[in-house]
Amino acid sequence: MAHTFDPGSASSLEDLDRFRYLSRDELVASLDVQSDSTVADIGSGTGFYTREVAPFVGELYAVDLQDEMHDKFAEHQIPSNVELVLSPAASLPFDTGTIDAVFSTMTFHEVSAAAPAEFDRVLGPGGRLVIADWSRAGAGERGPPVGERTNADGAAKALEAVGFTIESTSERPETFMLEATSS
Ligand SMILES: C[S@@+](CC[C@H](N)C(=O)[O-])C[C@H]1O[C@@H](n2cnc3c(N)ncnc32)[C@H](O)[C@@H]1O
Image 1 (cartoon, rainbow, N blue to C red):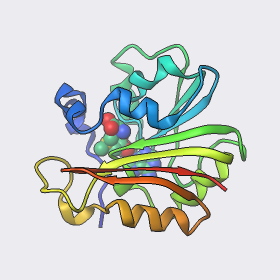
Image 2 (cartoon, rainbow, N blue to C red; image 1 turned 45 degrees about the horizontal axis):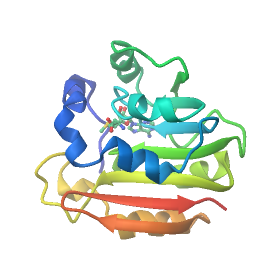
Image 3 (cartoon, protein in one colour; image 1 turned 90 degrees about the vertical axis):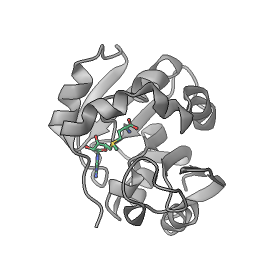
């Protein structure tokens, strides 16, 4: 069973070498957002990617299950358009259809099976979802054990089951990426 990220390892999330798995430009381009978009980052951790996306959007909610991770985020400068939100992915404190785009980096393997339906709820019709995560097809050179991961096909099936349309999937050496549109 997947386990929740250990806050004691938070410093590893700030390693710039992580951009080899997902770059800022790749993530921002996939999100397809505008400067006034309202966006949610699910499992924001120390804010490594939240801080990269913040300059390109209007409001950005940094959602994490663990207060300790928000404390780690707060050790950095929190961008003025970022709000830290303490919440599980499967029960988000946002009204239906109020979020333009949702993204989640290296966290999808940790969220519960109820999370995809919640992403669909908070996104309006045609809202954008971008998932990047460690892939079961990877070698396990970094990240969680391979057995705790899914892959692009597994994530796509879970999202299609709750009404998402899959726009693209890609398997890379260690990670997968998926772009979807909500119903
Ligand atoms: C591996 S870290 C990734 C952090 C960040 N997305 C990044 O790429 O740097 C996973 C984060 O997701 C959070 N998390 C795990 N399960 C979650 C859930 N069900 N809902 C919200 N956050 C969750 C953990 O507390 C942790 O901060």
